[in-house]
Image (cartoon, rainbow, N blue to C red; front, side, top):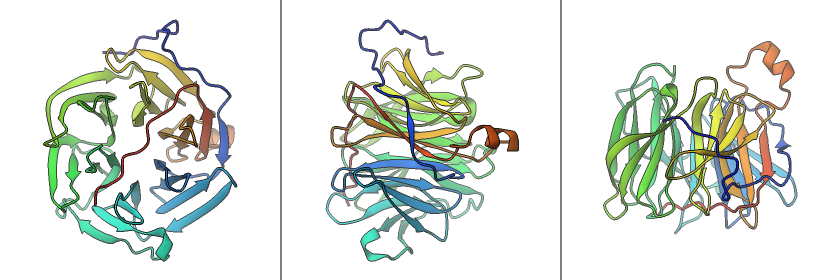
Length: 309
């Protein structure tokens, strides 16, 4: 199913300003947006350059940590300081306060797949971390979707992806959405919150030719999905039932990678981008490529769920 524009929809959200680049970082592969409620700061990563960034909008402060391997996603811990993160090979713990950039691995689910790495991920409302793996060359369908629990157990729930992105959940928590980026498909699964299991996989949305590829995404307080378009220079907003497109936010660079709501009222949409894959001509025409962007919206998002461990 392709999204059908419905600009006259009464629930259509509106931008209150043009997107602005708040950190012209020139990231090779910006990703992993997380708004920290307790710090009132935005965390994001540059996967290829192995960096974790922190942006403080109150002071415009910028902090960066460098790692020995790719870091792709991050979530706060509910009962301890620091974060759970996905590194190249699996799930790990990292506490910025210690200054130690050698995170402690908790689990590595794919020791036999040397050409795979972790990509996007986030926690469900029950404090379990869901993360996907992918082929580093973005070609072989060797990626899987995993659930990592606070007790240290890890379960694979789906497989056969070349590039994974997402997930995000419906407002009632009964549906999980997950992106098969290479095939331009967004899948929906019935989600059993109590058991942490998936069923009834179906195609929920397929990007139209020329619209780029679905990358990272998030859900707002009305249940609408906001999806970054790799190669499409925008973030689009979709009705949670029909998948119809309600609006889109154009960005001044092609490869848009992830988004998360932040700010004191959760009405600022933070958006990451990438320079990877751009031609020299595109780099010259898109000087803000790889930057972190922010745009004010008339709707709030939802706070990120922390990891229960």
